[in-house]
Image (tube, rainbow, N blue to C red; front, side, top):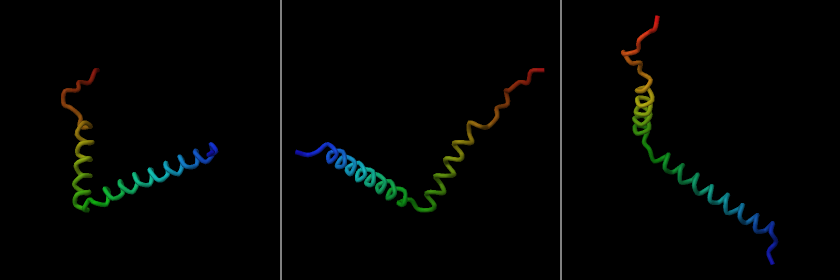
Length: 63
């Protein structure tokens, strides 16, 4: 009969292995970009983030 601590240990080991597989896949995906692709994506994200921050001309100042 398996003891409970063995089951917990095996579940922990499976969790560590699954996490490692997810991290490895993300790393491969990240490294698949060329430097030009990374640069263009960063420029796109900066442009998207800056767009809503532009002040509008219809703001009236209360005096």
